Image 1 (cartoon, one colour):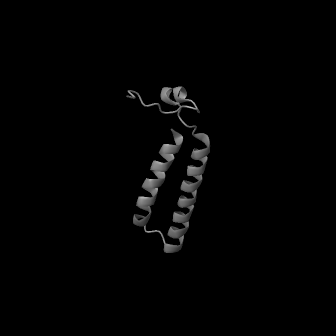
Image 2: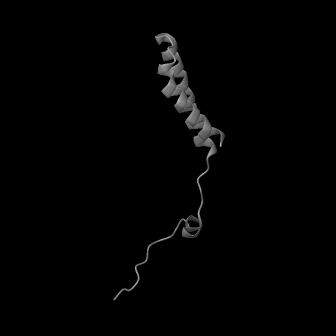
Length: 72
């Protein structure tokens, strides 16, 4: 739950930066830093999230083939 909250807070941060009256040089630095954090968050999340295995994917197996029923 930590990473979705982080993404939400960084999104709110990005939206609110222009309204703080921060000088342009500081603003660009903050935007680059926030973007870097979002990209790092994506790659960290990609490594930790395992694919979800469902009952259908367990039953299908690697060698499953399609067989058409009702051949006449």
